[in-house]
Every structure is written in structure tokens, then in C-alpha cells.
Image (cartoon, rainbow, N blue to C red; front, side, top):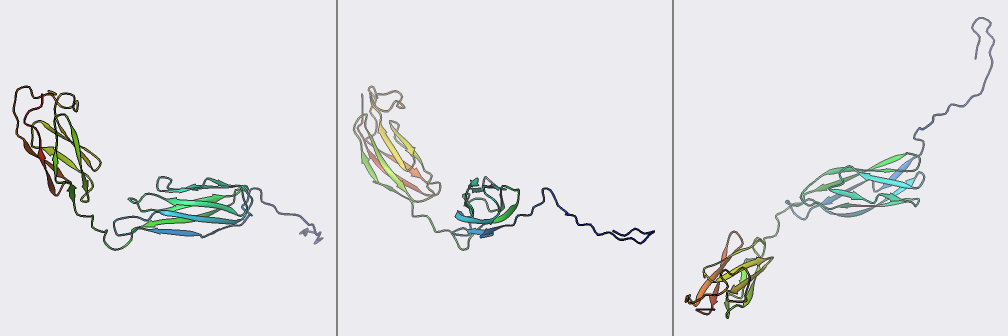
Length: 219
């Protein structure tokens, strides 16, 4: 320090410090991860491990898009270890995962989910098996739908036969006393009905018919 008027100079030693400054260096390996979908209609999903070097444990991690990209919330080891998971094939994002150590130092990891290339494979052909079914009074049988859209509806042409869909199974009931409670009335009384009919099963595009053989009257 120099006095301007007298020209006297005095040397003083002092320390400059910065409280709260980020003086800890962190690095992540890998610093970025990309998940690519199987085709042009699907965003990438999967898991990847991230290792954090430097800093002071414990470490914490947060995702900017937790509904699409999740991350292990904490790691007490040094180096820190985290797993990121991309789990939404319908939403492509570029998300930042922020990893912070005990001193407040942080490092960002970029997670990208993107669509792939090429067309999705065609679904298997729609089919229903067996193509025919025989029922006695108050009994239920079933047929199985495969392929197509994967979403099925079924209708019966017979006034006393019910068709109900659960997943890819179509349950078919010949109404009669003691059968499916959805049968109203439960019995046929004195009415005589056809002994054949059809249950039509559709995936929204194609229809497959199941041929019915049933009693004419079920009391």
C-alpha cells in the first residue's frame, strides 16, 4: 500500500475468500445419454448408469422431466452412482438430470429420448379360434381372438346367446335357468328359438364369425 502524499509504501499480506462459492469440481460419466426407439413411431426407453467423480458425498439427483425420465434420488458413495430410466415410449424429451454434492456443487447430465427409424412391424393377422362352438342349456364356452388391433368387440345374432369380451377371450353363454345372471329372463319359458346362430368378433377392421349350435329351448 503506498501513501500518495509521502510516497511511503507498506506491504501487507491478506487472504481473499469467497463464502459459498462452488469450488468443488464434479464430473459425470457419461455426461449425456440417448435412448432411441425401435421404430419411427416410438421414443426410446431404457436404463443407464451414471458415475459421478469429485465432490463430497452424499450426492442427490433430480430430473427436470420426472414423468418421462426418472433417476435414483441419492448416492452415499464416492464416486456417486446413479441409474436413469426413460420409460415413456410416447413422449420424446431432452431432459436435464442435476446431480449435486454435499457442498452444493453440481453437474448436469443430458438425457435424450428420440424416435427410431423404419416402420413398426405389422401386427399378426386377426383370427378367432375355434371357428365353431356347441353349447347346451345354461352353459358357457369360449373362443380366443389373436392379432389385429388387439382390441376386440363381440356381438351375438342369437337372441338367447350372450357374448362377452375380456381381453382376448370371448365368453359365449346359452341362456337358461342358472346361467349367466346377465341372461334376462333366465329361461326361455315355452318359446322355441333357432338352433344355430353366429357370434361376430371384430378388431375394428376385420370381422370373424363363430358358428353356434345351441338348443332350441332352455327352461
